[in-house]
Length: 323
Length: 297
Image 1 (cartoon, chains in turn cyan, blue):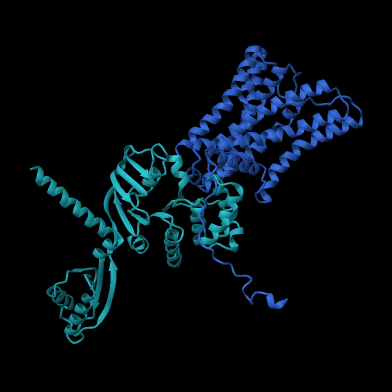
Image 2 (cartoon, rainbow over the protein chains, first blue to last red):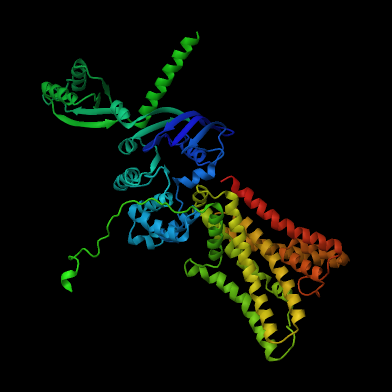
């Protein structure tokens, strides 16, 4: 059963349309919701929690209608906001116990669950210290703990890696995977970094300007977005020779799709492992040195561009049909 | 015995028993609201918070109670047979303490959650914004009621111990309870409403104190003007401008108590009814505005 279903969901504010006829279905697992800032992610989360009415369309969370069953949804769902939300003068334990009781857990159960969940998110002795003394990574763990303490069936995580250093980011992403794999809780995680979600999610939903750009499994997405960046040296004894053009010609001849990136970097679409061999041979035949050969992912903006292109094409097709 | 001990290093191992689901009861909105009420009421007196945050509310409670203790002790010692201060009059004399307590603690209940943006966490749970407001309002009203009832109880129990007139003291204690209820509703309501408008605690404290002081000043000055210009009979109306004078006048009028201190003139019957209505409007109005204030979050 889908954990989240939206049907023609629209939210208009006086001056801006935050969600524009969004129809999407989210299956159990870890699902990423990608969009630039202002794409409508936070508005969508608010509507899913039953905290803001939709202008048009319907949405169901765990089979419950957001318009009429908000209370029941909020009992079964956890929410981790993007912004700071922790008072600095209480300890993580006190705070999470309080939030557990706000979710309706009896006092004893609230304390037990808090001890459990703080251990699961990786907070040990420091949980008795005031939150004001924590690092950003520890605060993010407390925010996650308060979203999980009442054992929800689904958690909505809004930009959980924001403000973390690379190591903290990896830890948080691993923790998010565990929330699904080991705790059996479905996750909807938002980010503006597609690469980050590709590593964590089973499925990625991309929205822009409140419209659905793409909803596909991570495997599909990475298949089309993998690129190889190639950079080679100049010929020492022949400075006038345009190595890039020569290499590009050779690779294109070999049936590869090549585009130029900034500087001397060429981007080659990675269809399979034999692409590496073709590049190696081409570089060797030109007799130059290989400076760079690395896998790249499409930047989020490229997915947007591709999505917009596809939409544009669809529009044109529709236009043609009308004529 | 050492043979039966676990191998070295095994005693302090925390075994990861994996994630456990919660199968127990979920007690719903009523329970969550009551829990928020209890923790907020405790917070109003700094209980369950750092030692520093207990200083001011506890000091105010002490300042409120100690004069009552002294009055009772002296009256019993010199065998007065009667307390020198009437119950509602005592609260009038210490209005400033109630005002300082409200100004200091109302922001503790609301501004904290706004400043650290904890409010969305409450509303992402079954609790509705009106439940949140109800719990906070009830907690602050209860806190002011406890503060004002403390000296009333000391005086009443003291009058019993000193074998003073039971009927008189119980009747006037009841007047004091009514006064305490008025203070609780009006002070807590105004304090919370102002506190809900700013995430900065300092601003909240200053604004609430300013409300009580400025309105007292304006009210007093206007009364002076009315006296000088010969409108003495109408000058009781100025009590409407200050919450403390308002409650003092209303209670004096309701129970026909002798006038002292801030109130120089007894309200007419019309005046008394209007004053009572104002108290009701302040209590209900501040609550309604608070509910409205939080609806949009």
